[in-house]
Image 1: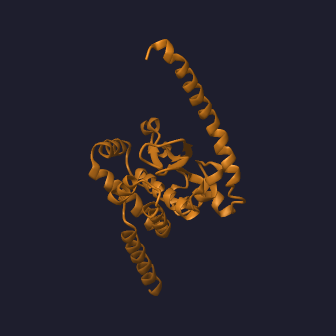
Image 2: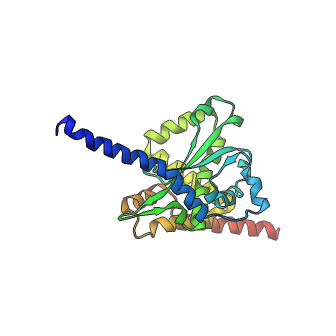
Image 3: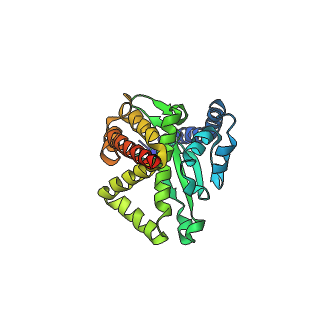
Length: 236
């Protein structure tokens, strides 16, 4: 195909792409209005300190944050992205802040605006609240893990996560375990079940979740152990 003949196609395709990008913020704003969380209780509002949260998921994010009092002062931005490679959510430190003292570190939790199903797409805002809270709880588990690492430790973490598959499994299971330990076990189980039992999610994605993350059965065992431990303390 010659260059001149191809140019009109490039122009039209480029225009459509630009228009689509401009419409995405408007689309998400409309969805946020439709999925408004309503009045948020004052006890949850307190957990919004140093956080940037889209209105559509504010209640669910604050609910998840309420299980992590250690992150009360952490600077975290939750933001929607049109797509994330191989993920639905990602918890990351802001690279430039790794040069500062740990207390001034900032984080982002990127959230894909949609699930890519086998033959369709599902808005992230349409998943059940319990599933959303469990998912965010897992990402907050990552951030709690990051908070315990030095800046040099974070650089090492990023290197090993990128190059060593076994380390990915360890990091993801640590995030699950931290979320469960703070009381989000049943929410995390709901998240895993939503993924593994969803008929329209690609099998490759389900296989990845099964391979890298704690299974619902293992999480349930952790929950039961925590409940037994708590009951034992009450008896004493």
